[in-house]
Image 1: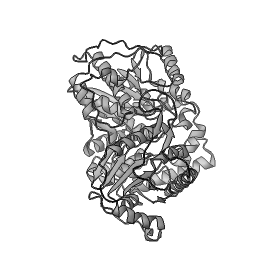
Image 2: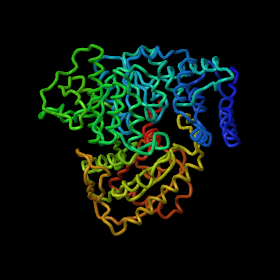
Image 3: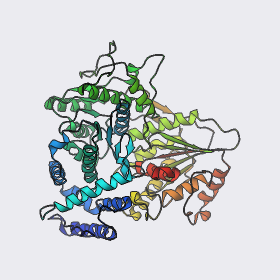
Image 4: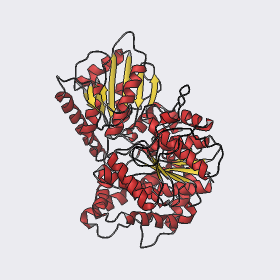
Length: 588
């Protein structure tokens, strides 16, 4: 049995900070005392110990107020890396594709990794957050690393950091930094040919940005998100994203609004980073053979176009053959930015785009009368895109012959997001019921280490759900008497994702405020499915629903419905919890 680490708070926190730190350290100790800290510890032990590195909410707020120069965060990351047994020079040996953006960066990475895997290359892929199990964040050849590999590398790193601590430093890095360092160790030790690395938040001060010599960089679509960290304007956010640019390293971006694109151009010019604008996916398609994508939704087309450029550039830089012959084209950039090359996609590129899988993003699960539409959209622009995908998917679904069609929204959102703006976009879908719940699969997280969250309390999560419900009801009441099927896209641009959004209802129905709040995802799914999903077996029924008029009347309607369409959105963590319950094989 190894000695437990001593958790010392940073100096100058004050009474509030010290209280928060004490609370956090007690949580850590209460969990850690039951664990065996040796090579024989289980995967669950490793995950529970990893979860102790989550940051207590009040302590996190203290850090935000006192964080000072964010450059210090990168210096701390470099120190942790050295203590782990790696030097910055070691990372130079990895052939990295570094990708950031506000929306679509994960999908872009998934497309890119799948294309390059089709060339017979051994790929590494680091992404966040995870949906069902934390080992999803570190992948080899598209598959999450095994529980055995995760456990081995976790304890090696954990022990190494324990052994190298001193009185001047905290022994362990926070959760995301720990996993980032662990991913670098895995990729180097497992000898991957390349690593696709997705930025966590922002770019300039993200802990993945200790990478100093990527092969190529990419920036997907930009928008407003994480304003408390990245800034409250799209220009400030663009500056943060451009922070991954490196001198002489080619970078690619998709079509952006003029003002953030100017920021990207200026940053690239200052760093002597060659920046290119990706042509649309249509430029790569032949009339008789349009490119097929494994990820649904028109918004995935720009992600696929960016992935083609990143994959081809990586292959070219590494001297690979079969990178796609250039096409004769008259396309010119309208933004005084060099246009990336247009080429004939190779067979591995076409197959890679077609076979890409990325759970929880525009995913459909059909279970008899029930159809689950899963999309982890959590910004106004990504919700807008998700609504368009949902509407198109519903139109393509075969209509029921007998019985009513019922539409349900399952929603949660976390962080400092404009919930009213997100819910307002969802109102035109005219759901019969809106259901809100925390991102917890069960009320008790015992035995469910991947779902443990120490950053917020259950009371806080339920309060947030009640606030979301109140916002939804107020919006629904405000829409009474108006045409609920017309919504305008928030920003003018070109392409199918912009312009007026007109949804036709499947049948006339009154606008209502039928909404419910559940204490966990399992209870919400049980009410929605009413025992009609053969793959979902709830562990415990929600209590007291028989006396709730909305719940009881809704249960009758759901049992009689010929078709139940459920949109799950607002949070990737919510989508992950739903997937965990609907598809238990994902936890194996």
